Length: 220
Image (cartoon, rainbow, N blue to C red):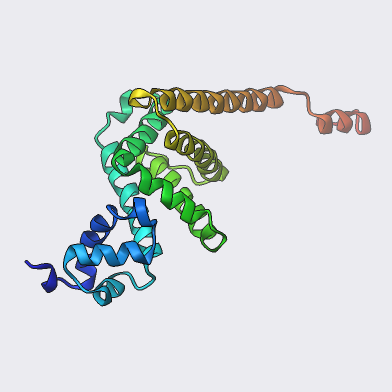
């Protein structure tokens, strides 16, 4: 089917794919979107119908598509045979490996999301990626751990992503080592928190002690 026969909704993916070739030079801009429309053989007006909010909507789609592709790849892993730290490490490495061919587009995307007008979108996209990873790894928490896991992973992923963007080592070995160090640091913190909670459970209760002083004949 010719692209001219596609609906604006059906044109979104072809336009995004074409746009990725222009983003390294023009950023996530309407200029890049118009160039993509030319490459796809459709008018700028049709491109505007496909992405009513312009290039920023195309960036949103790109990020959502990246999350979906990452989740599909994670689903192919033998998760039950892996420790949790190895699962998280593998998930982040999958995300980076999939983005390797568009590293400059990722860089330009971060620059766009760093603008005050798009700060909310940037935070939402980061949270969505962390949430996608945890859900793909089988997380079913519903209490405060649901939030802390995603906050911690957001911090780790964002730091690793920035490191990866400037990494020139062969096979990104420096990024992999950096990722391992960050995961190790998180695991140490979690272990310390667990040990503190266990120690707290075994500590004598001040309330019970004061209760015995006040009511010596009554069990606290």
